[in-house]
Image 1 (spheres, one colour):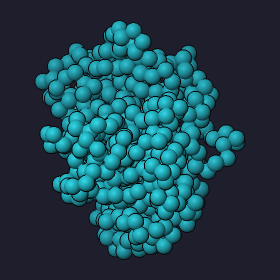
Image 2 (spheres, one colour; image 1 turned 90 degrees about the vertical axis):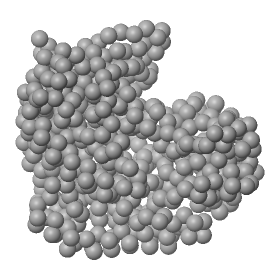
Image 3 (cartoon, rainbow, N blue to C red; image 1 turned 180 degrees about the vertical axis):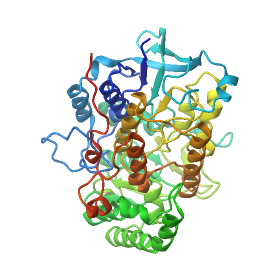
Image 4 (cartoon, helix red, strand yellow; image 1 turned 180 degrees about the horizontal axis):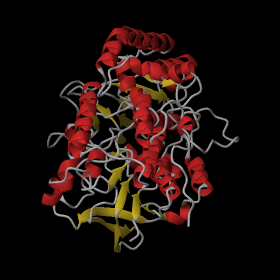
Length: 523
């Protein structure tokens, strides 16, 4: 019987999952709800740039075209489409196909609970169960049932289900006379419609991270000082201009090398590594403090109350650094962006706009919430069975229910790519897809369920410590350590560079890990 592989989502994670599955001899079927590939990259506004340089945010075996000269490109879609064409992925993608539910059939929940090995045998296709996939055609709303022996879930955490703050009755958006929307809706609009929406309007943007500052800059560009954009943020982040090469090097060499991982405590580390991290922790603090002082010296952060209460080191560890749009502080200086903070317990709506101080509303025509997504809920509710939903709720409590950030110890024949994030999500997704393809091809032996759960718990303890302020599960500063684990599982050397000092002190890029998955000739 054919071992059918289904992939849900044709964003960058779904595309690399498709590519590496093909290399292992499978014929995956990719379900994509939209008419195009790219996921969240199909919904970006003009001021959005890559968070990483193009050299740090690229496919392992497919370089950016020479025509892309900008170090931080504003548009990524053409590169993604070129990748899909180059590796022949389009024939395997079923567009306008929205997966509305997943149901695992053929094995009882009681039987699954008794297993000592993942999927009963520890193999990707060992169980007699299979996945039923209900897929809705977004054109005519008909529903088709598909079946697969293995599912790779690539729906991401940063789209689909918007997160809005909670308001008391009578103090929420329902009393506001203007328009309220999420940054997700705004980014999905046609460019001309979006421009028409905000032009000559008083726009208030709620949020303090990447989508908030990008949206604020776009509104400021449209309206200038005549109708300035108000940006409301509860807490500031360490935001870095792309031209700060010194900070870029500090981040790369101070936090994202193998040597840098020696300065930080790691999940499951030995006593000697723990002792070394403790002894070297002052050096890590100094690196972060130097970055803070340099940024404060270069930017008018103190003048506008934008110095974060948390350290640069904490932000880097929790994936909470962001890149400033071009001339952000120039727009603050000229008055086309106004920065404000709400008073505790006074954040509410009136007919005229948001009330931040309990008294006077910020007059607004439009309020845009750039307040993130409920990605964990989106992943949880794709499952029909409460049995699987309950297991995925571990994401909201423990933040990471997945072994190697890829498979749940108690959910058989399923891989999830993109649940955890890193300093370069493409890099992390591609590494996970290579690991998963090798597992599908029989090249990886899993430990028993209890050992996997013990490993998951050690990472959860790390995330609870490093992401306590943000509720995140970021492998940012442990990316090299994490990749070393995946390489060892696959049977490849974790030493990806030539020479001792290069392996220890040079940042690792996606290209260093190209070819971890041996190709299989297609029949």
